[in-house]
Length: 274
View 1: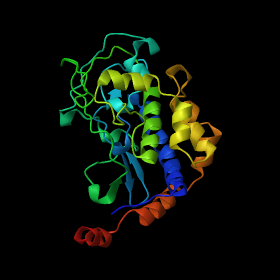
View 2 (view 1 turned 30 degrees about the vertical axis):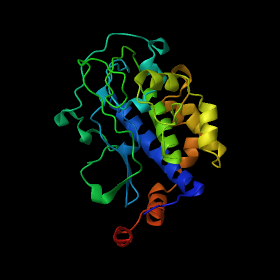
View 3 (view 1 turned 90 degrees about the vertical axis):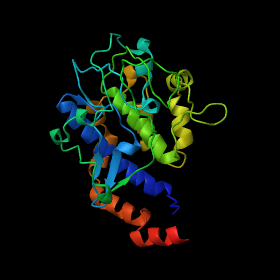
View 4 (view 1 turned 180 degrees about the vertical axis):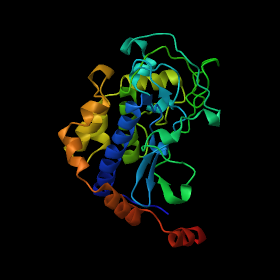
């Protein structure tokens, strides 16, 4: 079934997502945890109107509010994770083996987490990037599909803010804002790195959010600033934009949007027969 979303419906939903994800990330930070893999695949909408940030398999307990190990999907990485010149550089610490399911952070640490094994009650927002990182002990590769690389860059919670900005762009436009000369998402890590580092937030957001309010455009642009200029959770939670969104009855709105755009079991059966 093909569902056509209108800008108003998407923006209402995005506003709810922004509030829910920021609250989830702030709750994690309060427990000294950084998610490190914010993307559409990891944001679920419930039929009851709940919005949950899931999959803490790449999360890490911060040391001095910083992290340095390799984790997360490359297309959602901020510039500072590629470019050591963006921030302090030190040798990466612990290795991250993302293939071990028992290595996930306990999802009971925060009310921002949810059991991802309940697909019947949740709807995935979008198809995110399929990349999955490997351990740092492996040799680096120039392919974004294998996502093997080294990073010496230290980064903080603002890396998740960048990932949220890229996520919002992907939800609105259907793809991340990186394209090679053939119009494809680059499968070369060096090319992807250059596109991420040189991304112009103003041009990108204005193009992808054509028809949307200036308020949400400004928010996404702020998420995509260079690290030193990019706000942290605490900065975003006190903005007028966020304060206005907090007054929204998100559960009622999300349920209304889900009922309007999410196909019922009967509709899916009819479409399958056709």
